[in-house]
Length: 411
Image 1 (cartoon, one colour):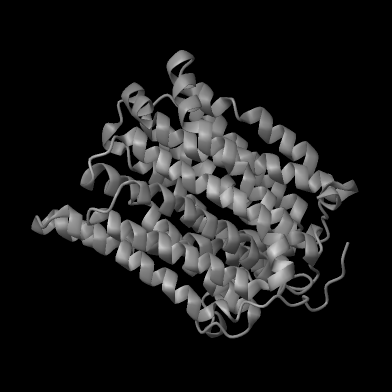
Image 2 (tube, rainbow, N blue to C red; image 1 turned 180 degrees about the vertical axis):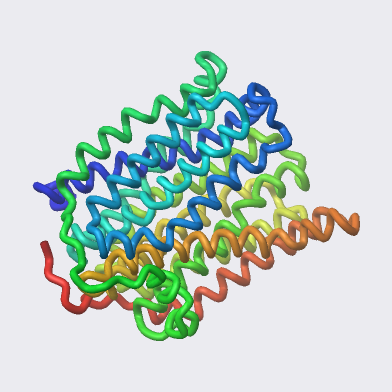
């Protein structure tokens, strides 16, 4: 662990951790305080747009972040990302009406999307192969505290001081992240001409879609992992509240369990990867996801409630094993000057997997609402679909073998 925080690399690590903490906190807080926001701004009809505007900006700009970093230099693009994220939070905090709030959320989404991709790029460019998994694992722990306290703290701040302070209060942390990381990351741009659509071409290439080679298999697996986990996670609360009759508070404890499981096993993943190899660790993560989602099929059909808490703790553990391991596998295939493109492709794979999972796994529930069929059966089928996505991960896990990146030298 000491190696991560030595010299210039240590400042990069500290800045990334602060930035990840901000991203986690703002993402979890906004869901908790949105009812107060729309009541104050008289925008109940635009409730969903507050999230859509953010993720639309995130999705639109994320593919280009890495290529821009390769072309113009990591420091310059990261500075723009942090500036836009800070500007978005500030504009949200002073928004006088709902249209202004939605516009500010779009700006915030642009900054967060660029920052998300740049965090991958910074890890790829600043850390040697044997430290990348550790850094990704440590990054995951930045979701523990926000996962436990951010929703409640956001609600408290919104009630006691006003919802605007829940956003404005994060601005000093962005300044701290910028001071730590910007002087420490390398600026050296790629002298070669960079394809602005390189991340999209890589993600949707034949090699990736057919998992040909270690890096492409890792990239495809990364998308599948997000499809399986988040395709189920989006409907955990519905299964517990809508089908089994638990309170929303009780359901939230189940979701928190996944955050704890993810963070705990992410710290174990680097040592396991070194001892067993990437493929076995990814397979373990896939197995945990399959068992967990299958457990929720049983929950929907009437199994004891304690299984839900055990299953979703296990699901989080599966993500903790597989997420940093697959990230390192993708980084291992990034040649000199292409780290940004590869990092953007990986970030885009996560978003594509998340969107595909929540959309496809939600089809049974949408059909149940339209045709008035039992919600219990629809939710069970939702988790069956998530289980199938997890099982598909087994098919490519064996190909996710780490390799030394061609042309790379350790800093």
